[in-house]
Length: 171
Image (tube, rainbow, N blue to C red; front, top):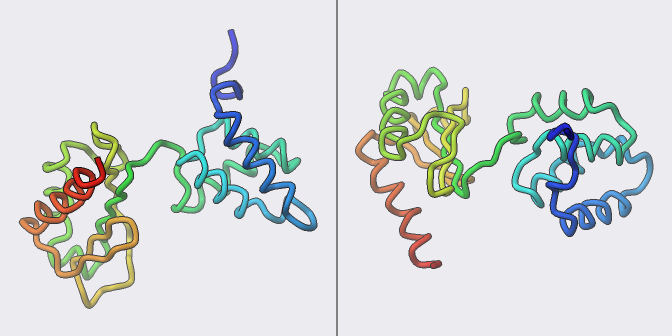
């Protein structure tokens, strides 16, 4: 039986070709471009499963441990599928003191998922972060790159409703 982690057949060949073209377009030592290649791979595939990490390692002539070390070190890389809308709740000191834990709890209750999970409809992923750097707006929640400040638990309903509404407009 094939090892699923090493099974490259589950990866979209068209996207692999696009990734190969990107890698081939890079100048100099390809190994020096690992982070750029991982960003491109995540942009194409949506996340970085183990078999894609192994593919990148082979293409760049790096160990799979080195590639996985980079993927797991940086918080902007995802090893699991993520929702279209990534909700991050700041749990830094200023935000926590002003009720970020209650905001996070409301997000989880409303979407019926725990941190680092994807909602049943595939739209949302929730995570907590240590600091967003907007302490004056505490508590802070972001959806992708949009920052919401001074968020109260009851504000979460409107925020989620807004993003669900965007999906209804686009369908």
